[in-house]
Image 1 (cartoon, helix red, strand yellow):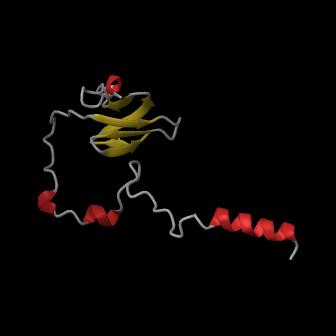
Image 2 (spheres, helix red, strand yellow; image 1 turned 90 degrees about the horizontal axis):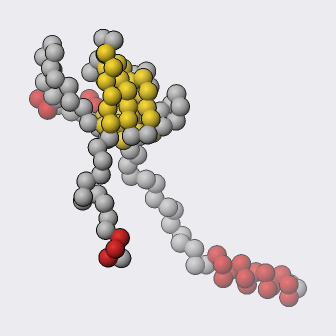
Image 3 (cartoon, one colour; image 1 turned 180 degrees about the horizontal axis):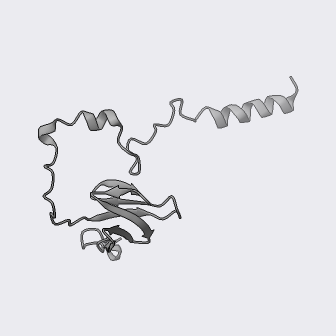
Length: 127
């Protein structure tokens, strides 16, 4: 073995040996993944929310948005909704930074994300 090959092998072993031997763990929770049908079927009927009345008040909370053109998503009360899909009879038609527009019976509803509260804002003056 030539000295160049020996030197290369020695350098390669120094670079490779410190690498961990285990694989990197995958993400445990994907915020935009839809639940499987098996997970939804596993919820006992008693735990399911009662059906709302004919004109029950709807007070949704917009938790997150992903703006991606026609593939945009909105997280409304923990439910992921794509543009064109309906949630409780409200059709999502537009998603923008911090807001979502829904229609029901020809009426427009604008949901906006709540501004971050004091606990969500980190005080950087102490760092």
